[in-house]
Length: 467
Ligand SMILES: Cc1ncc(COP(=O)(O)O)c(C=O)c1O
Image 1 (cartoon, rainbow, N blue to C red):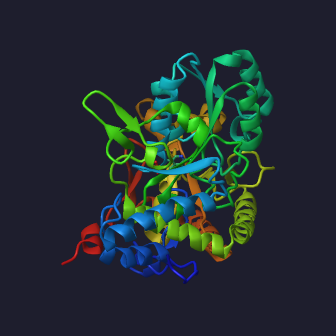
Image 2 (tube, rainbow, N blue to C red):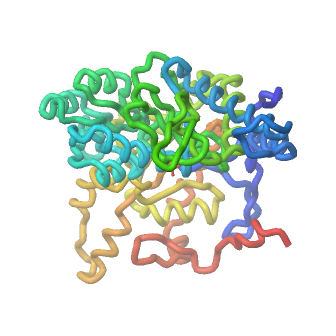
């Protein structure tokens, strides 16, 4: 939409008052949850809104603008993920990745009832796990390589064994391209090839890879690739389902309504023959989809490979700095590079306390707990929790004590982060280590393991509401 192809972000200069009363510029290290918005998204929305109209019509000028811009958005998203229009279609879904996966899980269950088994990797976000449990008959988890806190990516030998054991029974395989906890990548292309050998489809949850590396779906190897627009610097945008048209055809029409049908009588209806219209019923999030496509255009113009190169260096820097601290344990196989995110724990400071102090005293935004991936986080933590020393902990306090250890701190980076952000984080951690006893006195711990400052909080109303 815009000729200005510059990657700029909103909120890099956001400041908050710290618990010590100092004004600090926030350091944003929480992009795996949602990165900051790319300025292009707002620019695209401002340009479109004066012409805004519903789509599915070419009758007046504004309808033409919206309809054509949305058509462009569908093709631009395909370009962004390197998907040929010959094989693939892009469908905008409701609420992010979660909506698209639920839709597929429901559709694949109904269209392939003779195949009751679904293989799901053991490192999935709940969004790529629970829908398969809900709609699938038998979910089998694919083990990861390695052990305990040092687990790696999907174990291909175990994966192939599961495929062999269940042969024609497998409906589909569900796996994330990159873990939202450890940032570890899975070999999704190889997994897709194997899945197809056994007649299974594959769903790749691309939520954590799409902003960090060039996605290339050109050879129709992956049946379904899904991501959320908000993970691609466009907070107000829809989820995206990139579907192989043949695979989608097998599902028949999902989520029916206006816009996807060519004729309807009281007795029958006929779906439109072409994609994405056939699968895009109702009024989509037109403005958000166009904003997202505009951001994806700028990202392509900036160069996803360049972006990946710089992020890889920042992640390596983060990993080595954390690893140098003997009190810190980074989760996941240390031999594997991380994409975008990694999780760790400090042996002397609970994850909830460390994350709270980083925010309250240093303006550093990280995330903690289990990141909607409870089974994976539990398996990474299992040995540690088992080995917890409860000597001296009152019997009635033991459960709360264990709760405080159930989780991790996650640091995640985005296109706007630099090594300086990592250095800020590391010097804050060193500072916290030196002052932990005093800092602890300012916090009370909640039964769920989270920590609350005694007299520091932010007033969201003064920040968000207009007065
Ligand atoms: C790997 C992965 N899958 C799915 C989701 C869910 O995305 P959404 O909340 O946008 O539906 C997330 C969100 O963090 C994620 O990281």
